Length: 199
Image 1 (tube, one colour):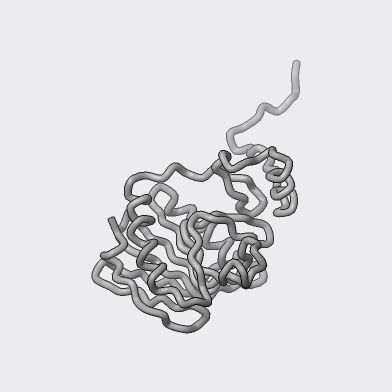
Image 2 (cartoon, rainbow, N blue to C red):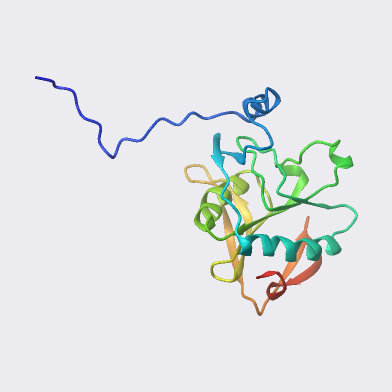
């Protein structure tokens, strides 16, 4: 008679966590390539969700609005990597210092003024996991373009208190009738009408 304990549904599989350096090594060795639609989040290589019509429409609408507002000391990156301590996300938008100022390297936390994620099916993940990652990195501002509820959520004042998860202390919700101030490194550079960038 066997005395082995059967597996239960509460048991979870082990998760192998990668460093950013190992992630880069896997890319350089061809284990991962540009056709693998993945990103590194808190040491875990995660698949990125497919993008629907509304997601792509927001990208199309928001891109020229952001570009025309940026000073010469900032640049816009779209769905490109940010190199953080244990993550390498590829946010829909990142406003950061120009490439030549970074020596041609992907931006890190000190190079990044604002991160924007467009969210429909990934809304809770972007609010929680991505928000925690960006807050831990100390990125000053994080926007979630919430396509589901037709609003833009602006997260500011990142903190990493001991004993609890990193998070943003302030969340401000902007509706289609509102304008969002675009503030980079503490300097206002303009305002964006929410209705102009929602599908």
